[in-house]
Length: 247
Length: 393
Image (cartoon, rainbow over all chains, first blue to last red; front, side, top):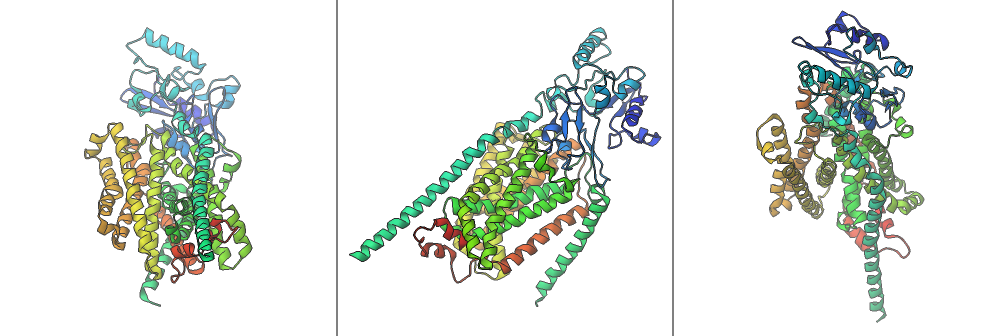
C-alpha cells in the first residue's frame, strides 16, 4: 500500500519539530533528525521506525531509567535523566536510538510514538498524514486481527507473516508486506528470536541480590578460617616457646 | 640528568599536549568531532580500551588483596601495596575516561538518584563507585604512614576485614558484569564472542590479568626504580598465572565445544583472525612458555609470558567490544587519532602518578627488609588483630 510519498517523514518531522527539506527527504538513513525513513528497493517501499517493543531492551539497559514504556504502548525518553552512556543504542536489536553526535549536551533520539497524541486518543502523526493508509494506528490486538484478515484475503499480495508479532517478545509496531522485511534491513526473526531481550541480562541480574550475601559470607568465612589458623599457629608457637624457656 | 629520562619526559609532554588538544575538541565540539563513533558504532575505543581493559588491568588489586589478606598467603605480601595502588589509579583513571565518553558527563551523579536495578550498567556503575571508595581506604594507610599518623592507621585497620570482603565482592560483581553488559545483544555480537558464559569469562580473565599485571608491574618497577627483584614472589605468581590461564582456556574451550563452534573458529575469516591472535596471545603461547620450568623461574620468561597474556586479554576485550560488532554493522570502525590520544594521555598520567606515588609513599618495602620476613619475624602482639600488622607493613 505504501507508495513512497514520504508524507510520514514530513508528518513526523513536523510533530517533533525537526528540520525537513529536500535534503533531509533524500537521506535514506535514520538519524537524530530523522526518526522514521521510507526505504526503496526496486518498486517496493518500507518504513523503518522504533518498534516500541513490549519488553524494550533500551528501557532495561538504561542505568538511570531514562526510557520507559507507557501503558498506552509508546517507549518514551526522559532527556533529563540521561547521562549519555549510549548502552540503549548498543542494546537495541533494531538499532533505533540515534545520537546527537554534534551536540555538546547530546540527546538520544528516536520515534517515541507521539505519546501526547496517543494519550489524547489521536493517531500518531505519521498514521494521520499517510494518504493510503499504509501506516495504520490502532489497538495492537485489533491490528493483529486486521493483519491476519488482510493476509487471508490476499495471500498473493502478502508474505504470510506479521513481523513484530513475536519478535523479541512482540513489538507495538507490526509490519505486513509483500516482501521480506529483512531486505530492508530489519533483523531476521531467526537472528533476534522471540525471547524478550531484557531476559538475557535479567537472568544474571536477578541472581545478584542472592549472590551478594552468599558471596560475602563465603569471603568472610575464608577470611576467618585463614586468619584463625594463623592465630592458632602463633599461639601454639608462643606456648611452645614459653614451655621451652620454663623448662 | 641522563638522556633517557629527558627522552621520556619529552614523550610525556608530547602525549599531554596532543591529549589536551583532544580534550579541547571533545568538550568544545562534541563526541562526533573527537571520535569516529557513529549511530552504528555508538561504543568505540574508549569503552573498549579505557573502560573494559582499564578495569580488567586494575584487577591486580583485588587478586592480591584476596591472596594475601583473605587466604593469608604471606609470601606475596610485598606486591599488595603496588597492586592496590595500580588498582586505585586504574579506577580513578577509568572514571576520568568515562567523563570523556559519556555524552552528558555532568549528569553522572544521576546514577545515584535515578536507579534502574534491572540495568547491568547500573550495577557496574554502582560497583565501580563503591569499589573505588574501598580502594581509596585500602590505599590510605600509605599516606598515613608517610606522615606518621598512627591513629588513623588504627582506624583503617579496624575496618580492614570489611574493606577486604567488600572489595572482593564488588570486584567479583562488576568484573563479571562488564561481560554481562553484552548479554543483551545476542543478535549483534559475533558468536565467537557472544556467549551466555560472558560474565564468567570476564571474571576469569580478570583474575588471570590480575596475576599477570602484578608480575608485569613488579618487574617494570624493579627495573625503573633499580630495586632488587623478588624472584620467589614472581615465581609463585607465575605458577598461579599458569593455573588461571588453564582454567580460562578450558572454560573457553568448553563453551565453544558446547555451542558447536569448534569447526567455525578454525575456518579462516575476518573474525577468526582476530580470535586466533587473541587465543594465541592469551592462552597458547603463555601456557606453552610457562609449562617450562626454566621459563617459570626466570624473570625474563615470566615477564614475557605475562606481557603476552596481557596483550591477549586486551585483544579479547577489544574483540568483544569492537571487532565482534563489525559484521553486524557492516563496516569497520577505526578510532580517530584524537580517541587514541585521549587514551594515551590517561595512560601516561597513570604512569606518572604511579611513579610519583612510589617515590613519595611507602609503596614498596625498603630493600634491606625482605617483606615476607617482616611479617613472619614479628609475631602478633597479644590482643592485636593479625590484620593490623600485615596491612601496615
